[in-house]
Amino acid sequence: MPWSVDESLPQAIFKKNKHIPVDTSAMKKYYEWRNEITSSNVDPGTAAKNLKNDCNFEGLQGKRKGIYSIRLSQEHRVVFEYDTTLHTVTVLSIGGHY
Image 1 (cartoon, helix red, strand yellow):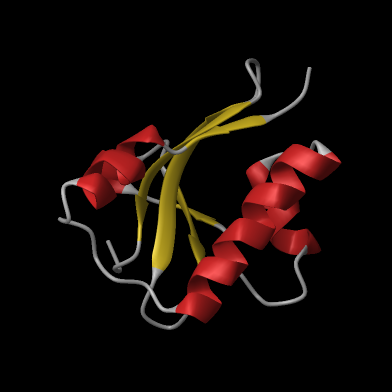
Image 2: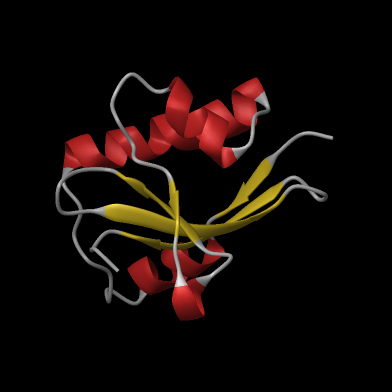
């Protein structure tokens, strides 16, 4: 089963113009990560490791257990959940630093 990425939540926030602006290089890193998941059919952690730049894939703790992030830049992160059974990644936010 191929992996898919659901970006509907950050897209809705962007359309309402309530997003955190993210610089071009950080967004490029996001798109590389997303394409690695869908094109190479790998889980988000493996996709982050496969990128040339350090993405610092990590699981969050406490109330956010089950939610993960990768580093796009010193300032920006992608926060997401993923399901290994359904092979889905649900992006919760792009930009900012939780």
